[in-house]
Image 1 (cartoon, rainbow, N blue to C red):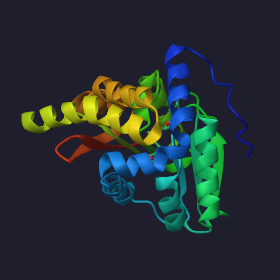
Image 2 (tube, protein in one colour; image 1 turned 120 degrees about the horizontal axis):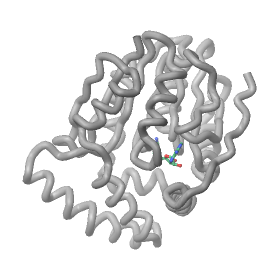
Image 3 (spheres, protein in one colour; image 1 turned 135 degrees about the horizontal axis):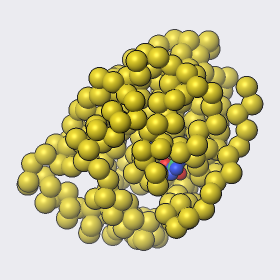
Image 4 (cartoon, helix red, strand yellow; image 1 turned 180 degrees about the vertical axis):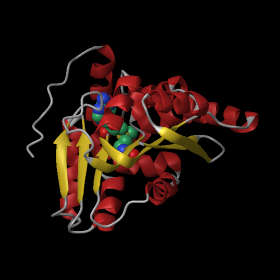
Length: 243
Ligand code: SAM
């Protein structure tokens, strides 16, 4: 199947998101480790575990960026399986593709530039779809969730890993202080770019909380939706199954 490339419609949010990821692409992995103190690796490890991915399966890592999840899926599904790393941003895709090729990941991975709201894939195509730290950047989240559900096979799983609402008030205060002061400072110091990291903090605050996102996934047509809070709800992993 030739999935082709998507024409990406422009509006203000899209332009802003594109600017942020063009700007951070080359420093993305370093900054991720730095800002989460390496904990994002554990959040992603849990995502892989809950995906139930098996050899021979077809997996989509949407908003896949530099490919942390794609790499692990590629090992899991083996030569008979297929992993597609899709991202709207050409700079992130390029960094991701170079990184994966440098590490010897070839054969069962494809790279597609696509918008999560208009996924260029057939109905009932994937066993597992993941979107990690990507949904909050998407303009029409309901539309994106519906489209992801459309391309899942019956029995397929959608996993959404995203910043969420801290479950205890102390953590909430610490986290607010961290994201609105420390994040932009680190952005300026290590990436010469405080604006992108201020956007990161704002987008986290605006993102739907655990219960709201669960309701959105159900409205998109997913069943058995559940979520797991991690790091006191700073991050939540939602999973839904298509029946
Ligand atoms: N999933 C990777 C990870 O966890 O390390 C990358 C996450 S990065 C914070 C967010 C990614 O979402 C960026 O690569 C960005 O280009 C992508 N993105 C933003 N809006 C998108 C959209 N509408 N459709 C697809 N990808 C999008």
